[in-house]
Structures are given as structure tokens and as C-alpha cells.
Amino acid sequence: MAKANDTKIKKVQREGVPLLTPVSLYPELCKAILLIAIGYCFCFLFLLDYSDPEMNVFHRYSTTSYTVHRHPVLFYLYVTLLMLTLFFNLDVTRRRYGSSSRLVAALQYTGLISMLIAVCIKADAENILGMIHLGCSIIFGVANVICLELFFLLQMRRDRRFRKYFIGGLVFIAIIIPAFIFKLCGFVETVPLLFAMAILYLLNYTKILEPLAQE
Image (cartoon, rainbow, N blue to C red):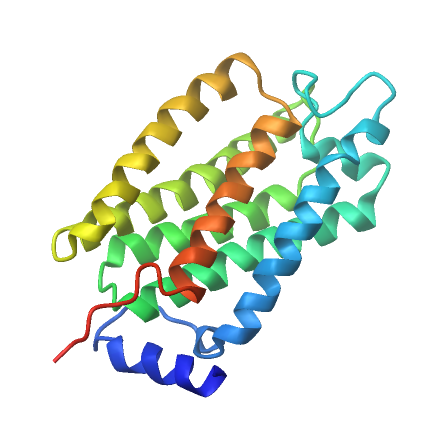
């Protein structure tokens, strides 16, 4: 089965897909990382209840970044899994569907780089470094969401099956933006990431959107 999946991915890949990594040639490995990340991120969300006696997953500003002060090892494992699973699985998506957009690739790498910067700076709202951390964290989320949504838009031009995913993404973004503005918390921060990982699973490892055969 794994060999058959590899063959399908290589079959639909177009020449000129920019900045692909060798890791995406092994979809079963990327799938394993994705499933582990989904489970771990869901469980990690509730560690917020123990990171500060006055905070919980629904408390304003009780973001996952604050867990680094009491659970540094678990926090860095969380960030590593989150960063790698989105990066590698977006790579699998672009390879599988032959996405040749350089902008999509640039957004994928922007998300990775911004999180690398953010993780090197601990959250502290009282100084400029804390603002840089927050800014890079926001860029990470925005870059990955736009990357996926732009992918849907470009694929929709030749495959109408992607239209409902593109529209659904717009609706989801319209709901999440006000939530971030009025109720930034661990729940609002993590749920969209879990949702994005679930979409990547459907794209990469199911037949719901099987790539069209290429000549």
C-alpha cells in the first residue's frame, strides 16, 4: 500500500514544483508525524491549566507560549512537532498535487522561519522581545493558513472539487479573526491548528480529493 501511494504521488508530480524537500518523498513518515502532532497538541492544550494558577485554556492571553515557564521540555516538543508536521505535510500536499506556485512555497517556508524565530524568544509581554515573539507566532499561523487557502484557490481553477474547501476556509478565517481579537487564549490559538492538520490529513492520505491524472 505504501509503495502504491508513493507511485501515485510521483505520478501526479509536475516538473518545476519549487523548494520541495526529500522528506516529502516518504508520505508514511510525514503521516506518522502528523498523527503524533495532532494527538500531542490536543493533550498539550490542557497543560495550560497548570502553567499558571490563574490561567486556563479559555482565559484571555493564556496562550501555549506561557507553558514554557513551567514545562519547557514539553513546550519545545510541542513546538517542534507543530512546526515540522505543518511544514512537511504542506510539502507532501504540493508534491502530490503538483503545485508549482512559488508564492505557496514561500508562505510554507515563511511559516517555518517565523516559528524558529519565535521559539528562540520566550513570551514576555513587558518588553520588545515579547512583542517579537508574539508577532512571529502570529506570522506562523497566518502564513500557514494563507498557504493552504491559496493552494485551494489555485487548484480550484482546474479542479472544481476544491471550491467548497476554499469557501469553507474563508468562512473559517472570518470566524477565527474576531476570536483572536476579542478572546485570544490557548483554545482559540490551538483549535485552528488542529483543524488545519485535519485538512492536511484529508488532502494527503485519503481518496476524498484524489489528484487528477496527469498526461
